[in-house]
Length: 60
Length: 429
Image (spheres, each protein chain N blue to C red):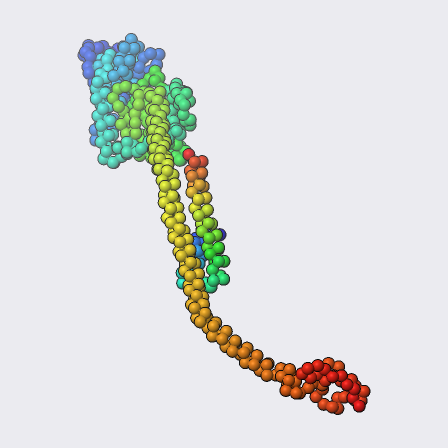
């Protein structure tokens, strides 16, 4: 999944959650999905950072 | 009858008269209509033309004996750059001689080279004036020698050493010259026509050449007069390719030199000039090359340092991006947990509200049930058969079942009658 896609999905979940659109049964499932998305985004950021450093090191 | 003389006697008479009456030497100016050498002597024909009609008005033979000619000739040619030829104006010292067998002749003892020189100069000036009037005098100098001047058309005499020198020098250079000879007579009266003919041949293939070189080796004679003609000068002046002359003389410029693109002294000098010209072009190219490579290198260095600046700036820039995104993710997470907690709280509150509503209902419900139970119990009590038995009623059972109708029984059936106290067993009759 792409970073922006993940972020958008995350925003949707948060918005719905804040507006109380989920019932209690859905809540856990959505929260779990949101946590997964957050982790995915964080991992992508870290990975990109590392890759940038690696690419620049290689070219020097 | 008058005495008759023999021709010899008569001629002798003439000779004696001339010798006695004209014993001196005279300076005479005249035009040569012919000049030739034979066995070391020089034989000339002198002429004077009418200035307006050009018709000869005087004519005479002249001779220069070997003894004088051997001295006069080198001197004359050194000064004038020309040898005696037809059409030349001369001033010479002569004395009269009449020979019985060979007739009248002027004997030349000296020639005034300066006079001829002056006349030549005057004629050159006339030609120059004419060329200027025609507007062609400077045409050659306005031409530009091509930068890559490598294909040379040479007008020269094939046998002359001059062309050899020229050719060898070009070949010895590091450049790749192409030269082609267009033979022409470089001496005497054929100069004009043969050089013009050669130029016409070059003109037919003009695209094959970059320039024309007219050269002449330093031969024994240095007769330049052939190069001082109007027709030749006009041809050279108007030729579309630059013409370099190297006709080997170091006196006054001849007209050909004046109208040509460039004059050099010798064929070797012409070759040297062409080599140098190309060398200069090469030098220029090399300088340009050097400058281009230096400029390119400088540019590369600048770009490289710009790139390294960029690459050092990228990680901090990205970490900025990263921080911003992480903060966003953090806030998302906070909102998530807050929202989910709030959702759960809300559900709990709703539930608790329900619970508080529910609790007061319970005792009431219980009471009602209890009351119902009591009623039921009362009803149950009032229905208890023992009470009936106590009041004297009894229950008849057959096979453990209460009998409500006598017809259910037949004779012989054993029945059981339950009383308040004890049981009676009997048989139906």
